[in-house]
Image (cartoon, rainbow, N blue to C red; front, side, top):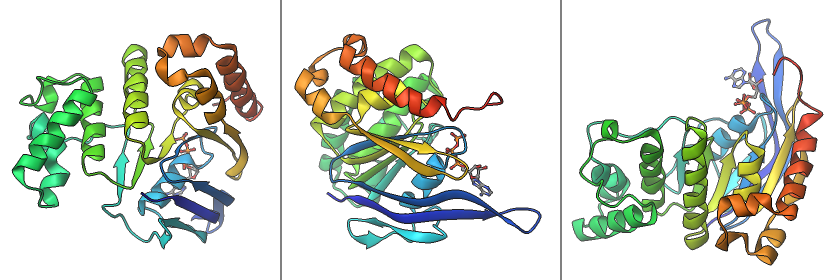
Length: 264
Ligand SMILES: Nc1ncnc2c1ncn2[C@@H]1O[C@H](COP(=O)(O)OP(=O)(O)OP(=O)(O)O)[C@@H](O)[C@H]1O
């Protein structure tokens, strides 16, 4: 397992007029091995840019990103990415989609079957293995995408608004599923979201970004409270009713609220 280190990250994009737009400024952050960190921030604060740099899809203008002590220069099999849009192969079944990365790695058929069966069970999707993506709901498709990224046992999971396209009810179910999966099989995870409740419910720590330029505003530690109060053994609605949860959510929300402009 590996950690993710952002060290003094700056990112400037060229503007049409020949100038520069500073999207991120001096962001230093470590996601420890097996830690689940959510990043929240107003629109344009650089959340996706940060994730793309960890994925190796974009590069910092200053500073560096390292995964497991190795500088990130390109995408790699040690990092799995889950995007908002369900990026499944439409011509492959659920089973083939989940097993895809394993097959590319040359895993024997028996191992592929075992892993597919395990994730179908963990994601409550048994019986769907022979269906095609168009025969599944959005929530089910995203479960397959998550199962597929876990199946290759990456050191690092990078998720950019993975539940953003789901309806509220499905989203809640998915949050519970992800909590179950992530506590059973913890991975170093960077999770980007707009949703404060989702961030507080899922994470060990919540990173709040400010914008203009994108900077680290505050890091809120959730884990001690979650462990002390046994959130992982409770249903999501029960957790969200707890005074401790409400307190943390309000704290994060206030950090965001004073940055939101009327045109957002
Ligand atoms: N390729 C690019 N060229 C120019 N500007 C860019 C580019 N990519 C991102 N930006 C700008 O950088 C800033 C940060 O973008 P980013 O998508 O990382 O923000 P975000 O916090 O993920 O936003 P949102 O919550 O709206 O998805 C934005 O102002 C965006 O317009």
